[in-house]
Length: 110
Image 1 (tube, rainbow, N blue to C red):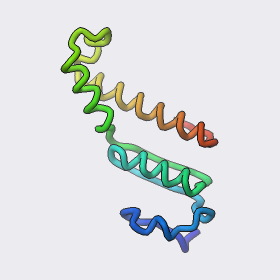
Image 2 (cartoon, one colour; image 1 turned 90 degrees about the vertical axis):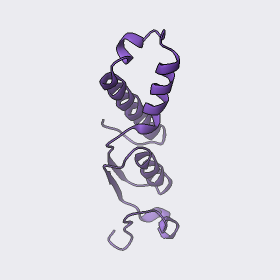
Image 3 (spheres, helix red, strand yellow; image 1 turned 180 degrees about the vertical axis):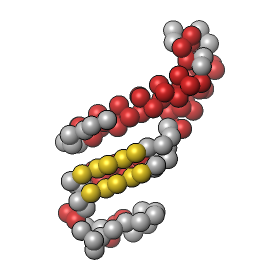
């Protein structure tokens, strides 16, 4: 569908007919831009959604704050290392995204 392509921001997203979005590709959509892209694709009934998120700052900030305030948390020995907080955040965020896509009726591969 070359007539309805969205580049850059979503300021023109209202002008795209809901039935014309075949494929949504979001490469290196930082932080919640991936979630915005997924939501846009679901709202517009995209046939295929391909995302490659590059960071997960939204949840990571929450985990960091929680870890700092709760040093006796049962996972404190694991989460005391930043790399494991980062990996846990990525896994959790991408798992939630996959579940939400499945709820919306999409087959997912992570």
